[in-house]
Structures are given as C-alpha cells and as structure tokens.
Amino acid sequence: MTAQSSKTVLSLDSEAVFSLKDGINFKKSPDDGKCYIIYKENGELKACKNQCKHQGGLFIKDIEDLDGRTVQCTKHYWKLNVSTMQYVNPPDSFTQDELDVVMTDEGGLQLVEVIVWDPWLADPQDPQELQEGEVTVTYLTHMIFDPWLTGPAFARGWWLLHEPPADSMERLCMADLIYISHMHSDHLSYPTLKSLSATRPDVPIYVGDTSRPEPLSKGSLMPFSCYLRQIDEHLRFMILKDEVHLELDTCIIVEYKGHMILNTVDCTRPNYGRLPHNVDLMMSDFAGGASGFPMTFSGGKYTESWKADFIKNERKKLMNYKAQLVKSLQPKIYCPFAGYFVEAHPSDRYIKETNTKNKAEELNALIKKSAPGITTWTPKPGAVLDLALALMSPSRKAITDPPSGTNIYKDSWDFDLYVDELNRAITAEIFKHKSWIQFYYIWAGFKNYNLVVRVIETDEDFIPIDNGYNYLVDFMDLSFPTQRPTREHPYEEIKNRIGVMRHVVKNGLLWDDLYIGFQNRLSREPDVYHHRFWNHFQTELPVTGPDWDLFLQQVPSYQRSAEPQGIQTESGSAYTLS
Image (cartoon, rainbow, N blue to C red; front, side, top):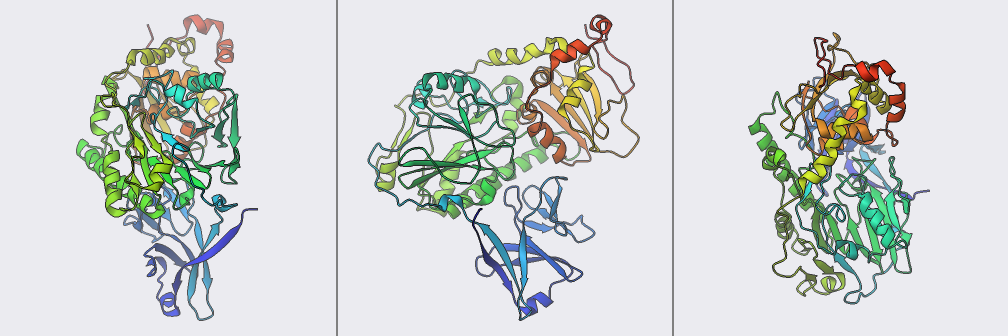
C-alpha cells in the first residue's frame, strides 16, 4: 500500500468562511502565495488548487459562463467546471483533483491536501563521493539515430537538427541499461534497438508499462512510481508517467551511490507535478512546437497574425514555466536537451518559418538570472559531463565539448530515402477498393460520439487530388454518409498528404504521424478540441494493425476488377482512379 500523509494548504477563519459567496471563490495563501478555488452551492463546499492540469496555468473567471460554475486557464484556455471538477474544454477529458474541506470548531475551514508518499524517498541512500570519470553523461542527440542516422520522426515531419557523433552506436553500447522514454517514433527506433541488442545482448532495455506497451524482444516493462529498481550494488532507477499523456510519455529517475539524475524528457506534466528536489542533474525539454496546433489550422480566428501572436506567447509561457519549475526543484545542474528538431523538408517550409521555438541558451540564461546557484549546461552532440567534477566545483572543467571544427548542426538530409518509403503505400492493393474506409474505421473502434469528420487526400501542397479519396465519417453511429447529417453536430475537415495517410492506414499507426508530424491541415466547426476523438486516434488504436489480408479475401471478385477506386463527394458522385 502506498504511504500517504496530509497537509493543510489554506486556512480561513469564520469571518472569511461567512463571506464566501455562492459559486466560485478565488483564494490565495498568505503563507506561500499559492492559489486555490472554493466553490459554494447550497451551503456545500468544494475546493481545488488553482492550477490547470495541462501545464500548471492559473484559472480565472470564464466570461462566457452564465451559470457561475466554470473557470478558464490563462495559458491555453482550458475550461474547468468547478461544480463537477470536470474539464469541459477539452470535453470528455480530465478530472481536477479535489482538496478536502475540513470545518473547524470555531466555524473556520481548512483545505487539506492528501500527499502520496514519493517512492524515491523510500530507502534513501546517503550520497557517496564520486571519483572523476566514474559517472559521465554523454549527449548524443534528441531523437533516433543509427542506422537511421538522418531519418525523420513522425513520418517525415521532424528531422534531426544536431549532427550525431559518428560513433553514437558504439557509445550507446557502453551503457549498463537502456531506457526508452516513450512510444513515439522519435524515441523508439526498432532498427536501433535491434542493432543494439545484437551488439550487446546483455544490456537490459526498459520501457514504462503504459496502456500501450510495445513488444520488445529483450525489453522489460516497468511499473510506474512503485520503487527504485536495483541494477547493481550502487545503481537504481525508476520510471514515472506523464499526467497529460498517460498512455505514452514517461520520464526517469536514475540514482547512483545516492546521487540522483532526473530526466523528464518531453513530458507535459511529469508524475502529476510531483518531482524530487535537489537532484544532482535535471534534464528536460525546452523548445515547444511539438504539435500541429495552431500552424496546421485554418478558418475562423486562425489568421497568420493570430498564429504568430499565439506562438510567440506560447513559447514565452513555456520558457517561464520551465524556468520556474527548475527554480522550484533546485537541481544542482540543469540541462535542456529535448527539442533539437527541425521541419527540414522543403514542402514544410511554411511550418519551419511559422513554428518558432525556444532556444536552450535562452532558457539557461533565464534560469541563471532567477536561480544563480544552479549550474546550467547547453549540450552539443558528443559533449560529456563529468558529474563528479561538476559537483566538486562549477568552475572546474566538468564538460568536454566536441573538438573544435566539429559539425554541430546538420545541413543536409536524405529526404527521398524516407519519403519514397512512405509513398509506396499509395499504390497498395487495399486502396483499389473503397470499402477499405469502412474496414479501417471499424478496426479503429471509435464510435458513439457526436462528431462528423471529412477526410481528404491531398498532394504535397494540401490540394485535393483528383483521384484521391474524399469521404465523411459520422462517429455517432460509425456510418459513411455522402452528405453531412441534418442533426446538429460538430464538424472537422482534415486534409492529409496522401502518402503519409495511406502509410498510417496500411500499417495501423497512430495519427501522431499526421498531426504532430505536420502532415495535415485542419478546420473545425465549432472551434473546439475533441479530446476523445484525438486521444483515441493518437493513443488508443488497437495494438495489432488491420488484417488487410482478410479484407482482400472478403472483397468480392467482381469488385477486384471492376469496383471504382474513387472518392465520394457531397453530391454522391464518384471520381474514378486511373
């Protein structure tokens, strides 16, 4: 059983309790400045932290709320119904954690937070002295490498910004254990793991036991936040999950001789915001921009000026959030490393120019200004941090950078090798029969949700292809109408590059390749994020892909030769593929 404790985070005297109005009350602790929300209805009280689950933003009154029950986050405009503690934008998504409301004998109240005992505090180890060279941290690159040395992640959207050292695989093979942070294609490369496993079959590979574990022949699934797993006499580690992307993202704590390293990778809210303080080394993301929003959206408010202002503000908010997080955790050393990617393909020039990102140097400068006692490290490919030297004295030469003249940033990529592989799916046999649409979405298993989606296959410039598919899916009853239904319904239009879309469909891949990879363009009516829909197609598709062999067996023989290979339009007419 997990040990728990509790603490009082806010106290109100009887006069303050009497002054609470019906509906939403914002309160701030005079002790630490932290903010809370108290909701009053028919004499009953509910309370929570004034902190959004997404990225810790502050809630304010929602001016569009006429019932006095909803607050809106100042960061990304998420909305929380405080009467139910359910987030209503995005709908059908998260629940806010409540605080216990305890009334005192004097008529006052206390807000009490139940604290789960942090597992890294179990069996604490006193730090032992480290010798020079005993613990080194080598930065190779943010994303996958060898044998896909210049390869992209998320289909063809993310390309390495840093030039990995030529001996990256050799260096990796010197490891005592391998940790795979999450199941996205930028962190989990099966060719890399296969090569590594063949070279060092004795090296264990650990993956967090998410709801979507990937089969690793030599891997071990690790439960979350239960204990520090002992590797040898001095080395222990544990894997933690992300609160926002529960199914995929994870982070890790490594401890050696009582010295702790925290690597949050690119989790949005790692371990529900509960992280160890005063670790020896903390590593995290910094850049932002790892999403199609808002660059790939059009219509309504999504003008170029709105996008530019939004992105600028978002990057600033992320920078301040990361700096504040590091300041609050007080690591001895901090290294921003996850975010060195670029939309390098020529067809994604618009995304590259629009999707500006934070720089690691700027984040480190902000941290040094607010927390000068923290040593910061901006990594270069092949750079090595000697932890013993860094802890002895920040002024000592603890970091060995690559030799002078080393090419740090990539200036060329082998686009055709990877794009051609994706485009091979265009001519797959299954797409000669329009019934693949029904077969695929039945396999996907998402229905009973009031949303109608139009999916359009396009060329590189997102112009609909004359002989590409263009179809509607009504997820209320999982039907495929030729026209939008007459009932009231939300609507999304998704234009996908044909090669990537068919590659995703054929292989039963998650739609992250389309959305995070900038391979589609979207518009929606009304402008609401449908969490259930996107969460399903980005994280909850069946682990086993569609059985296309069975599909082809079921296609009637006359259709194999005569069925139109075309698209359904709103008028119901069909184009025919050549």
